Image (cartoon, rainbow, N blue to C red; front, side):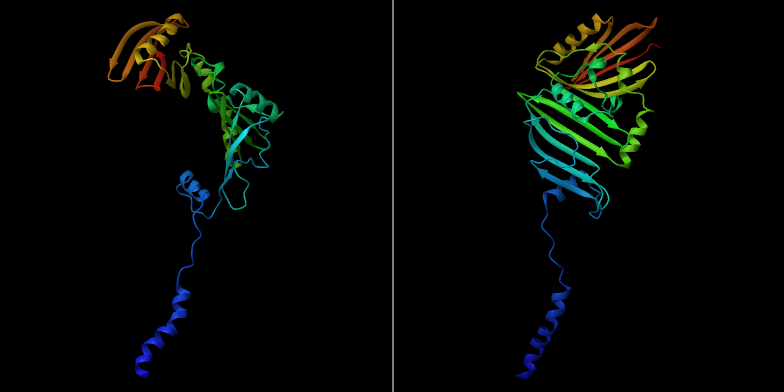
Length: 291
């Protein structure tokens, strides 16, 4: 009988060793961890992180939201252990129009801030080309000392305006602000384009663009009930009013391309208006020197 107990005794003797070598239980995943992986796939987990505040605004935001705002939540992202969040995004709804939200933020920020017109390509009302819907707003302001950047995107949905307010600070922000002075703001380029107002009831999101010299390109998304032929004619009428002359038109698949000529500075120029896809259409307006 004793010899039968030896294997059992040996197993009992090894039990503490096995228990010590078993991996410790890992904490359950959190929404913040999932969001961090989504935002930064190469995040190692040992530096910085993401904090999610549902229905809350951080105490250090430094910008008062409009009275009566419905706060959806905040996402704060930091880099480096113990570092102040370098990016804070607050999502909220308000009964104010996008333009009223902009006016409120300008007042709330106070003195010492400048508009970063080259960063978001805004305010669009000072530009030519595709004009955004009055229900959409994109603006940004910056402060050099300390280096801080505030961006706002607002869109009216029915009687509610959905707003995303982002505050950025840190070394990357300093570099971004320093580079603004060396940029050629898109606004000055787009002033060379005819002003194109969207059809009534449509929504337009300017997507940016660029160029230099005789060449300027601007793109936008246009959501409308009009078909592509009617939308092309809507913008074509405004181009003709601006002195553009239609040279050629082609419809290939889901793309309508029109080629124009016009005179600027005593020289002949070439313009292109391209509408692609279905609503929301991808629209492109382009100019270049005649060759």
